Structures are given as structure tokens and as C-alpha cells.
Amino acid sequence: MELRKDPITRSWVICGDEPEPAGSADSFCPFCPESGLPLQVVATAPTVNGGPWSARAVVHPHPLYGIDGEPGRSGNGLYDTMRPVGAHEVIVENARHDRHLWNADDREIEEYLALCGQRIQDLKGDLRFKYISVFKNYGSMSGQEFDHPTSEIVATTFVPRRVLYELRAAREHYRVKERCVFCDILHQEQEQKLRMVEVRGEYMAGCPYAPRVPYETWIAPRNHEAYFERTALKSGAMRDFAALLRRTLFRIRTIADGFHMVLHTSPNTVHRSETLGFWKTIEDDYHWHLEILPILGTKAKSYTFKEVYYSPVSSETAAAILRERPTE
Ligand SMILES: [Zn+2]
Ligand SMILES: [Zn+2]
Ligand SMILES: [Zn+2]
Image 1 (spheres, helix red, strand yellow):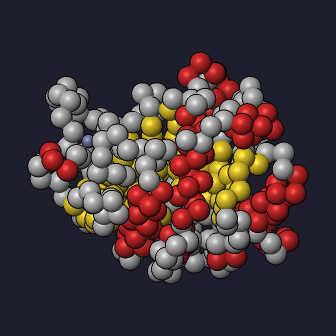
Image 2 (cartoon, rainbow, N blue to C red):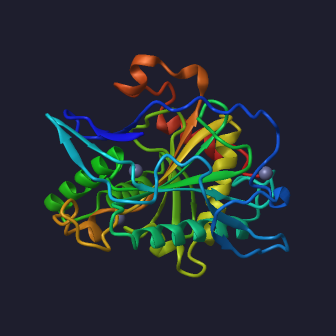
């Protein structure tokens, strides 16, 4: 595997010929506590209900990124390449095989979120890493890898494309208006209430004005905060977020079997880097949030899907439907 930079869009892709999977089609789960498999445990969140633990981070059994060495960025004519140096971990969301983020205890979900925050903060201590991604693929159409409730965390030596677009746009909005674009959106959405799904404490769930897929839903803190980990590591600050995440995923699961979920937070600003050095207003211009993209298999149109997003359900209708859906 290697990282290649698209010379036109300047986004990095990971590319290589992957060996065929070994094809062990057994139903044995490596993440259940009783599996006894020697996993490389990175961190464990304490139990809240008498189980062995509530959440844990382990090294991905087949990591796409390797932790050792330097990226060794080099050129080949007009092309750029680098080694896939990074960290690739699995976050086991719950010790139990059947407890998902939509049917677990809020305290278990809180522990999972705190663990994500802790892993982001720890990985940002490594000055090679520019960005830490947390994401989850659920359902057979999503690219889900494991049956056990899991998310993934990937630390990379570059900022992923979508986040980079958001960071650039947020910086530009701030330069012109001296305000955070996300705060501006949240204020307007809370006033208009057209696309709001639920407000819970300091957090709001709602459908974005220009969705990429039907029922796309974001959850964000209502007050400005650029860094997810700063909120996640504050005692009690994630209680309402945990409940809102559980309720929102439950609603979405009544409409779609699968979904992608991705956390967007500030890149690594612990170390001044050349790439990020000119982002002086990140603290004020960026705003962490979680994006949930439901997968409605039949609606994907191959051209419109990636070139111009097409949603056959408007955000206003989606929010109205989601508001009426059961939450547990
Ligand atoms: Zn399991
Ligand atoms: Zn903001
Ligand atoms: Zn985002």
C-alpha cells in the first residue's frame, strides 16, 4: 500500500494491490471478551455495569497504516507519494456483541465517546500525525468489517479531503465575517426549526440544508467548540450527546439498515506544522460535529452519487419524518 496524491485535486488516496482475504468464514468473534485472542489492547474504558469493560481500543488486526517510520514523501515526475505511516485502531464500542450505539446504556456510550476523545488526544501527541479520523461503517452495504459493534480510528500524516474543504471554507467565512460558519448555521436552524430533529442539552441533531444522501443527519454542540476531545474529556459533558447519538441512530435505523458515521474535529495543532501553521483562527473558525450518512441501497444513482449529490428526500421532509420516529 502507498499514499498517492491526485495532482489535480491535491487529495491523498491509499492505493495498492491487496492480497486476497484468507477466507476464514468462521463465526468466531475476536472482539468478544471471552474470545481469548491475543489482541493488542491500546486502551480500555472502565466498566459501568459490571461487565469486563465498557469500551476498548485495539490495534486493527489488518491495519492499512503502519505505526513505524517516517512517511518519506517523495516525487516521481509530477506525482507525489508517501508511505502509509499512521495508526489504525479498532474501537470496540461495547463488551457485548449485541449492544450497539442505538441500544446500549447511555453511560456505556459516554465511556465509548470518552475513549475516542482520549485516543484522539494521545495520537495528537505524535507530531507525525496531522489528523485523527473516527468513523463507523454499519451494514452490509457500508464496508463494515466486523460483526461486533466497532468503530475505527485512523491517524494520518495528512488531513483528509472532506475535512480540508470544511477547514478552508470555515476559515474563509471567519475571515470575512469574524464568525464561525457552523455557529451561524446552528443559530439559523434553531430559529427556523425546519430541519431540526432534536435538541438535547447542549447538543442539536438536524438534517443539513444541502444533504448528500436522504436523511443525512449531523449532531453538533450548540456552543462553539473546535476540538471534540476537549469536550469528550470534560466530566459529564457528553451525557446529553450520548443520549442524542443513541436516539438519532435509533430513528435512522427505522429508515435505513446501514449508515456511515464520521466525526469531524480540528486537526492536530499541538505541533506547529508547515501545513497547518497558517491556520491561525482554527480555534474560533472550526466547530466539531458528527455526520451520519444513512445508506438507502436502492436510491444510489451511479453518476449523481459522487459527481453531484442527489437526494430524493428533502432535508425538511427528512427531519419531519425523523422527528416522528421512535427513539428506543
Ligand atoms: Zn463479538
Ligand atoms: Zn462554532
Ligand atoms: Zn463535517
